Amino acid sequence: MQLSNILKPEAVKVVSSASSKKRLLQDLGDLAYSAYGISAPAAVEALMERESLGPTGVGHGVALPHARFPGLDSVAGAFLLLEKPVDFDSVDRQPVDIVFALFAPEDAGVEHLKALALVSRTLRENALCAKLRANADAATLYAILTENQAVQAA
Image 1 (spheres, rainbow, N blue to C red):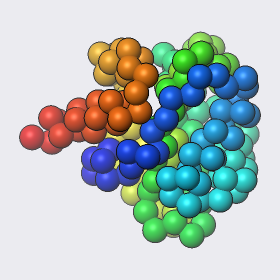
Image 2: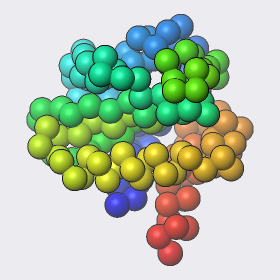
Image 3: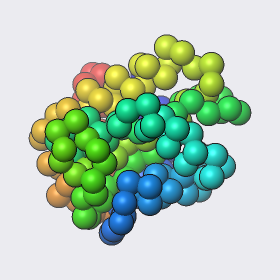
Image 4: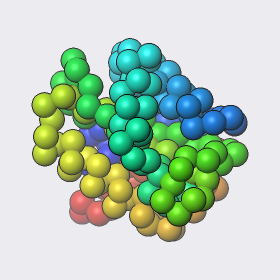
């Protein structure tokens, strides 16, 4: 599995400001709708429900919100780069500016976990995160995310 299998170019966006974690999740819902046709209110509800189990801010300015979702055929990703970091109740108490959300079919099981592990591994690379933070163009961000995978797969 590669990021290009779960992330469409139109599911990558730069957000100038999100005033709160809830607003950020709403931005993700809107992006999920525009890129994949996923109901924005249902996506936000699913992400908020997952966050109530424990925050998905993994540290170092990165958050990986995710939820299982009825009616999906495969795992779908949405990526946001925030120009102004927002508090996300992260494990290291640092605000986040890199957010990669995953929406998985209700019965995805292993596929969901593989996608989550892939995204987590990818965004654990400090050099990659620095490249992402240095670019404010969605097409460039998509290229950075998917190019990295192509190099690893070779």
